[in-house]
Amino acid sequence: MTAVTEMLKATEAAVVSRVSLRDINRVIDERILPDAFVSLDNGRHVLAGACSFIAFYFESAKRLTSEERLFAIKTAGPRLTRSRALAWAALLREDWTVRDEFLTIDLLPFVKGTSERLDDLGAAREIVCTSDDILGGTPVIRGTRVPVYDVAAAVAAEYPIGRILDAWPSLDAEKVRLAAIYAEANPLRGRPRVSSDIPEGSTIVTDRRVPRRRKAG
Image (cartoon, rainbow, N blue to C red; front, side, top):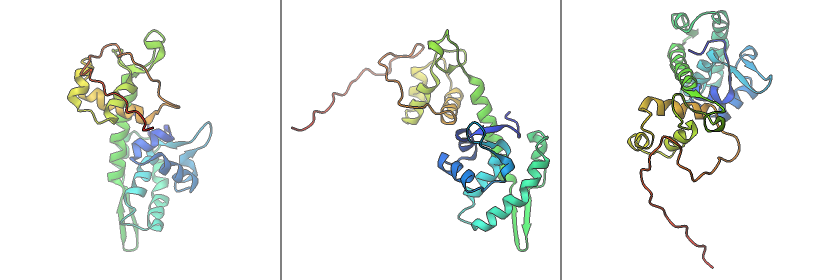
C-alpha cells in the first residue's frame, strides 16, 4: 500500500482525506499542518500519513473549535513524525489519544480511515497502465483497452453499474470503482477530448440520439 512517508499530490490528498481540493489548499495556505508534513517543491504535496489530520480537522468542525482541532494536530504531530518509519499496520497499534484538561480526542478512527483509502489509492494506481501501443498512450484499465477516464465519466454521470458493465464487459464492479478513484486523484487538465468513436472493448447500450434545440429567433 501507499507508504506513510509518501508525499501525495494535492488532488490525491483530497481523495484520501475525503475533502475538496480547495480544502487541501486551505490546509497548506493556513499552515494547519506542521511544516514538515507539507512540500511546495515542484507542486503542492502532503505527507500521506498527515491525511489523517486533514480528515479529522474538517470532519470534527461541527463538534470542536478551531483551537481544539489545531491543538490535537499539534500534539499528535510528533507521534506521526516518530512513526514515519513504521508500516501502517504498526502505526494503527499506536496510541492516538490526545488529552487537554477535560477534553479527550481519539484520532485512531481517522488514522484507520486514511489507511483504508490509501489502500484504495494504491489499488487504483495498479489497475491503470499506459503504453504507446495502446490507444496512443491513453491511460487504460490494465489488461484491457478501456480508457480509465471514460469509465470514470460514466460513474460521474451516475450511470447504473449494470449499464457500465454492459458497455465494458471486460471490467467488474471493483475495477469501475477504482477507475473513478484514479480519475479523481489524477484529474485531466483542460477540456476533455470529444470523440464520436466507441472505445474498443465496449458495446453500444443505446443508439438513441436527442436532437439539439434550436435557439429562439
